[in-house]
Length: 496
Image 1: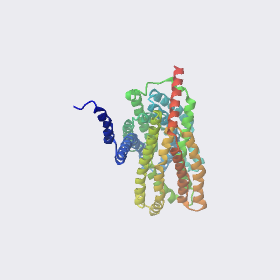
Image 2: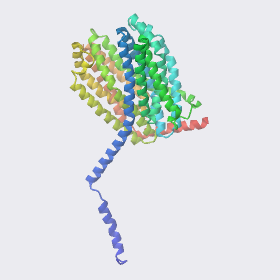
Image 3: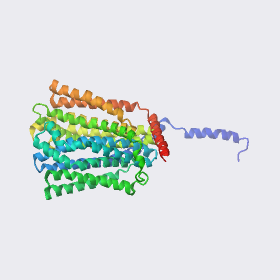
Image 4: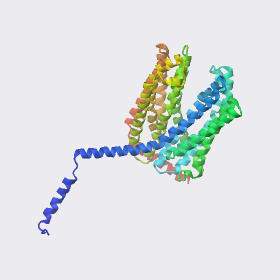
């Protein structure tokens, strides 16, 4: 047994031995840091794909309903197909983009409230959105009621305008379903209940296929029957989500109807309007591309080729739009919980993941640039034009893998009003005039119009949003979210 005299020396040496043992080599520290970063990326990716996966499926299911309706209408005749196409793409397309954009305000409010564990607020916010969007639906009714004369003014043939107007009247129930369905989807997404959206979307798609077959082929209700099928499927989707949300699926966030939904409506309207304008300016941009192309000399081949490219772009766009929704939810959740660094990390992971997917599709288009047109046409002039446009399609897909994700960051952070001004300037002050200049003044045709609009408008908007996101003070954004939620809680106490 050592003597007491030696113990101080032993005690003095022990820490030195421990320090030597625990000291880590720089290479070991770097490896541990890499492992820690990989673990964080894996965890964030799982959270992201928990939203992205079902969101992609539900969006493709909804997109497929419109494609199926057009397919059934195509078997009735060219006039019927044209009437359904105009009603869906022009009338419903305008309505859809505006109401969807307005509902995205819930991605900011519900996402931040869920992150802050203010669960009661989600139900109140959703009820406010129902009120605002329902009023908006009533105000938008003239678009459906007076579709025929409006289409005639825009130069459509009388027969086509009349039939499109009749179809539009039968789509009014679909119009009102948007006011309830879009808020329900965002309400559920914000609390990561995404699987139910995918399952109910699958059920609605099956309903749509059956009702389309029944109305068009079995009962032979014609084009009106084909258009009415969308009412059944979209209301089936709406009622399915409503039943889940209000009948026990969300016990913490749905506590019943509340009079608080009628308070603070003006602030809610302003945020909803900013969100609606932000997304509408993006949605209308490529519709203007098709409209401008249709005014070119001998435009039939160009429009056919551009329509093929836009169909492929629209289908692939379901993936970036799913990332748009998921990024908005993840950023809002982290800001609501006061975690600015978490919001920044979620943004980085989402952007990089979407870019990788965009690069994959960019490579596919570049490899099969002269092949994918055969899916839609066997006309050599059309296929040659599609081949020429394939490079622009590839770059559009690549840019669209970044831009919607950055827009999702804006929605999650509540920057909708700023982004609306950015979209207005980039798209309509820079992009459209540049497309017109290259298409007509420099005689570059559809390639000039498209190139001017994507490199002048979309690319500029993407760079500005990237610059804003990089320079963002995330801790300050988290503090803003905390102050907003605190203010809401104080208001609630005053009401009580």
